[in-house]
Amino acid sequence: MKKVIVTGGAGFIGSHTCVELVAAGMEPVIVDDFRNSDERVLQGLAKIIGRVPKLHRIDCTDEKALDQVLKVEAPDGVIHFAADKAVGESVRDPLKYYGNNIGSLVAVLRSMAKHGVKDIVFSSSCTVYGDSDQLPVTESTPPAGAASPYGYTKVVCERMLRETSASDLALRAVLLRYFNPIGAHPSATIGELPIGTPNNLVPFITQAAAGLRERLTVFGNDYDTPDGSCLRDYIHVVDLAKAHVRALGWMGDQKAPLCETFNLGTGNGNSVLEVVRLFEEVNGVKVPHVIGPRRAGDVEAMYADTKKSASLLGWRTELSLADSLRDAWRWQLALAKGQK
Ligand code: UD1
Image 1 (cartoon, rainbow, N blue to C red):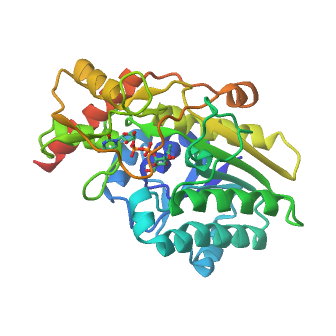
Image 2: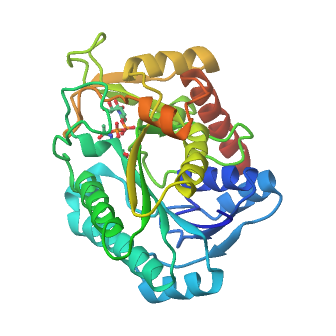
């Protein structure tokens, strides 16, 4: 695989994946309309890889525009990240999520079919497991029903890929179920750039530690977990990005049609309070926080069984939770410096 279209390549996971693709000798071509990302990522990428990657500013639900890109670029494959991802917003505005997340995958697949592109890696999420009582979850753990419209779009997209790969189009598809991606590139030149108030835990922690937010609210301490707060599987975004390179390599050796799912996590469950304490310890800063009520839709505990990705992709995480929290804080400090 040489040239790869990276939809959503200006986003958090997409930008880190572009770095790892270049490191592996591939050429990422970003397709992004910057609706939920920031132009600053382009300078950050240029600092790491020595140039701004090629970019097409288009909406991925616009099939005609995608056709043009695929015609001009003639890529070897596609990594499809572009999607909306805020669980709460998806409950308030489900049509935005069905329209964009499902609409963009339909457009990408139709355009791939027209241009003879057969390989796709899809950004899925552990959210498809819902509130599973079987932990750690394996790729064959039956999905317990996605708890939000956002989660359900991932269930639908996964099914669309399974059916399309087995259809006359005979695609090769790899579905990557991310657990909780956090951290930033260790150079502190790219990272997460949440627009407005962050929904996710770690960006909220870094902003609270930096004094940009008054305090973090820990959503619930009455769960059936060792300290009462929820457990999640937090994975460094650089480890996650590297898994995409492994997935492309593995897929290249398989026969079509193919549709294979992999969990991408560390295999560990860490509680919200553990994350707060470790962040304070490794960075020597305080995170003002209070305990609040549970957040609607949160599952008590979720962490990955990682055996399949280790044995088939030869991939496992190399960075620790402490590394992730250190890099997240360095990125927050770099952002603050850039804004002065
Ligand atoms: C969820 C989905 C994940 C999806 C992501 C998209 C599950 C298990 N995970 O992640 O697949 O990709 O949304 O955004 O469905 N928390 C606080 N205070 C805060 C923010 C968060 O205590 O201000 C807690 C949450 O209650 C949760 C943990 O921190 O226990 C992580 O939350 P978050 O970062 O929002 O990710 P998930 O909800 O786990």
